[in-house]
Each structure stands twice: as structure tokens, then as C-alpha cells.
Amino acid sequence: MGVGTTGGRVGGRGSRRRGRRSRLNADINVTPLVDVMLVLLIVFMVAAPLLSVGVPVELPKTDAKSLPSESEPITITVDKDGKVFLQETEVTLDDIVVRLTAIAQNGYEERIYLRGDNASDYGSVMKVMARVNAAGYSNLGLVTDPVSQ
Image 1: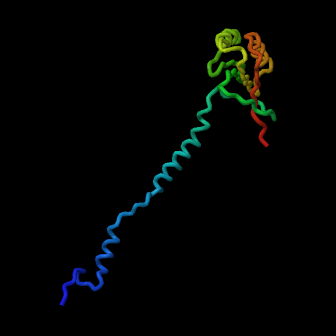
Image 2 (image 1 turned 180 degrees about the vertical axis):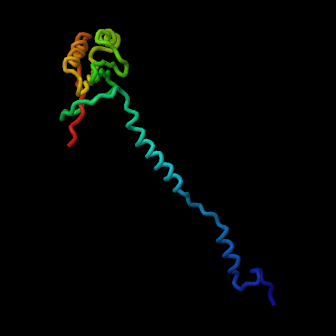
Image 3 (image 1 turned 30 degrees about the vertical axis):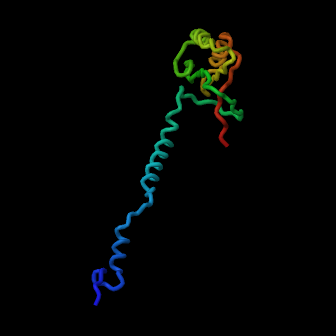
């Protein structure tokens, strides 16, 4: 008679089953990663429109193509009340020439974008254009919104 090492079972099946149950799973669980990425995607989709800086104006709609720009341009905004902003700072008409002359140390070839509200007075926008020209800048672009189709 022989002595068995399988715990009394024939063929040793019991030891193999226990070995399979105790093996570790080496797969990566990506479900938490996907959940985190979807939450981040939603957060950035909601936050992106809020990050646009500047003075809120309703720009006129046109079919004009956008101009390429390598650096951040100087932006002058005329809102519907006739207030003038250089970047996000409110300035007076007389102050525009002084500030643009100070910026001109980089050269007068820098592009200036003029944003005029759709409800603003045409004369206010023209006065600002005249002041920009008086400051020595000739590269002036008018900003509009594209026509939605």
C-alpha cells in the first residue's frame, strides 16, 4: 500500500483548484482612470468658455476671414456705452495716444485689433481709430464675429 500526498483525493485535483484561486490578477483596472478622465473632460468643457478674457461686447457679424497672429495683439474695445478699453483697462480717448506711444517701443508695426460693440456709436469707433493713427500705428484690424449659417 502506498501513501498519498493529495489529501486523500485521487489524482491531486484538490491542490490544483486551490492554486488557481490564490493566483493574483495582473491586469490593470482602467475603470477608475476612465471615470477621472471623463470628469476632467466635463470640467474643462464647462470652464473653457469662462476663461475668455476681455470686455464683453456684441461684435457685428460678417463673412470676413480671420487674420493669422503669432503673438497676442493689442486689443482696443469700444463698448455700447462708448467706453474705451485698452486690453481690459478702461482709458480715456486722450490717454490712448500716451499708452500706445509707450507700447510703441517694440515698434509701430505691431497689429492692433479694434473691437466695437454692435450697438456702439460709429463716431466713437472712428474717434478711436483716429487716435490709434495719431499714435503712429497703421496696422489696424477690425474684429467681427463670423456669420452663423
